[in-house]
Image (cartoon, rainbow, N blue to C red):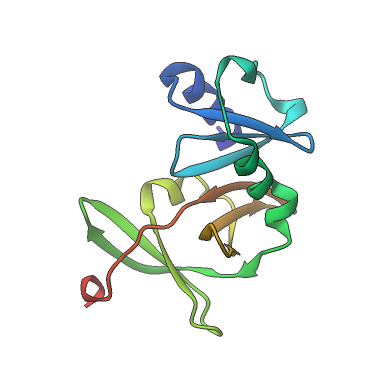
Amino acid sequence: MLIERKVQIEAIKTKSYMAGKADGVVMFTQGHYIVYVPEKDCLIDISKIGGLRKEFVEKYNANEVEKLLKPIGKTRKMLLYAGRIVRLFENKETGERIWIDKKYAKKFEDCRPYLADIAEWGRFIVFKRGEKIVGLVLPVEVSEDAEK
């Protein structure tokens, strides 16, 4: 089952998600990741779910995020850090690196990762299936000492 369907089921079951809508796309988040669902494919009434702040919806809007994408690849390097397994994503050419929780990366296994950076909001990994942004995962801060 695609993450776009799973997130809607989880939103109903757990009631721990928030949702917002911009440019015909519904955004679901529980704080660590965002899933983008085309409004026509959204099966639930998002007015019954906690709403996202307007500024958050504007900054993480799929059309705005699309403009920030840079190539990045998934590496085989993982760490057990702060009680969770984190995976390294890296751009070999620029040396840009970002760690994300493996549990969240796994939700987007069938997607291609990209790096995005919103200056005042930070860097994160964006996942695309084909030409469509499917999700976004926030990073885990890993100290350089932990990498050794």
